[in-house]
Image (cartoon, rainbow over all chains, first blue to last red; front, side, top):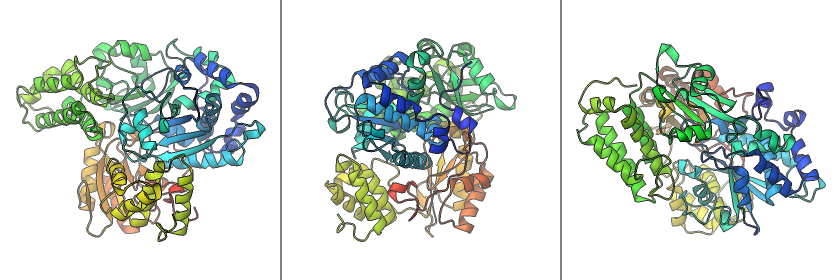
Length: 430
Length: 209
């Protein structure tokens, strides 16, 4: 259909796609030369706006529009969000490890467009190998004159600092990430002010996901309009999907959106192993409400179609569950995650996620009470009133409401199974 | 600065200086310096936190408030090999609980514990981004994907017997791993020398690497 944007180099040159020699040899840093010598910051921003690319971190906000909010004062900062921690997601890890120069070229072009002279790449602490690859690529880029003072005689200067996280999912939330980068607890900030106005060190800051920024060099080489022409109108470009769970061929797949879920799970993912049946899947990372085959196999894989069906494309993580899956056990595992990762600032999230975990735990232990389903829904409603998606918020950030997704999913689609577990019937574990 | 950390290795003192210079505000260096201090003191000890406080111009309590927020700053002693078993959803669906059980059996310790000989610490952790190669384990944050309970047991035995000074992700993957999240490409030369993420600027891939 179309050439891959992000992953063709690592597919064609598996041994050395991460090196500057291979990157330059395959057309790398051409976009940077073009951007710095032939384009103004304004024309670059126009290209990114024209691309209609929506941010790949989870929220799906158009990157060009976000850039447009950046306040005029200086200094200003660009921060790349490589904290990839949404359960089921491992796409940025591959982009960082296998093609770090693509990201770095994107950072340099973006920094030039945004008049930034110090950019940061925040990488989760559990990704030391991706961090080493990126750091070595940065050293190579300095040596080649793509970073540092007066880049290739253009008068533009940029430094990049890699910063490792400390093991906290919440730092993927952009204001928590900025607090972490400032040497503070990774607690999300109240917004407004938004980072584009008061971000890192209270200066104007753009925070973009690794995959988003990795797309920038292609846009400069091929134009924003060419990018917008790929795929459905409001889900432009290619997108990395991470397939995991009960699927024959787990892995990352760079695809053009607009296929059905049946295509993605059965054709691309190879279907369900061992002749099992598909029971449910999570379409966009642990935070997203689940889909089920009776309702959603023909739903289109686009950001808007997924949203209309009551869930979200999120981080592109697709977690597949077969018919042996105990949905209460799966929900417990998901809720346990959010309870563990809650930063503790907001009472509904801090208390509610742990209560949800405890109630699910006792159901799993065979000690469920008849009123537990109502209790789960009542606690959930306290975190996210109305139990809708996108969620109503009682909290600073969406972590709390994310913990509600597994609850609404199992009670909506698998109520008889949940009731049977509370009733003491035998249900096989995973 | 050098007085505060004069007992640190010369190379780590230099690294600390570079890290402090790499940020517009010194406070941003707290997390990187905590990793270096954890190497110097074997974990994020009270002394380590005091030194980081002095280097960054904040109080020790402020450093503690940061260290205590993040799971990777170990404020209690930690074994030579920190074995982190992912038990989040994708690994759980592929049998991670059985892998954790095997690791606990082979080391004789449970989540959050350190063996008496100081060789192992074991923990179950939330998603480490290896979902396509589930179930996954990290040793000193270096990754092995596609484990089975048997392979996990063998990994622990191998660590016990060969006691590698540098934990290399490709070596472990080759010996004990299976399904990977994606093609890893060429092998990675650097590895972990301690239960701290192995990253050159933090001094955690060894001297002169």
